[in-house]
Length: 85
Image (cartoon, rainbow, N blue to C red; front, side):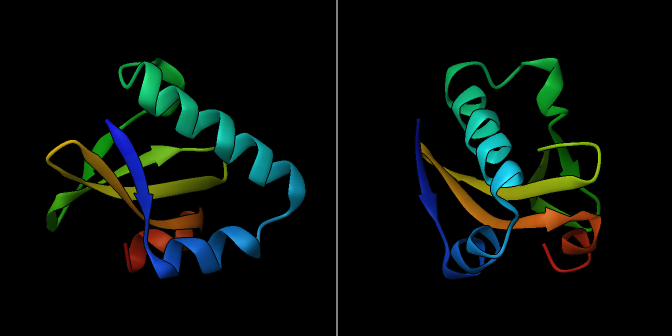
């Protein structure tokens, strides 16, 4: 699998605190290497059948779609991003 980002993800990412950026990178590496890792807590978002969420920290999440061999990263931020994944 490979990772591709969307413009909203990039905009969200660049506004994150540095420590959260580092944690996001760590979690995305885990997504590529071991998507079943318990710290990711991956699950589908209700009402959005093709969109998944993953955990960055207790307060931060990322959202993505799976398209063939690509994880398409949609958003990253606090739980509020789940309102518009």
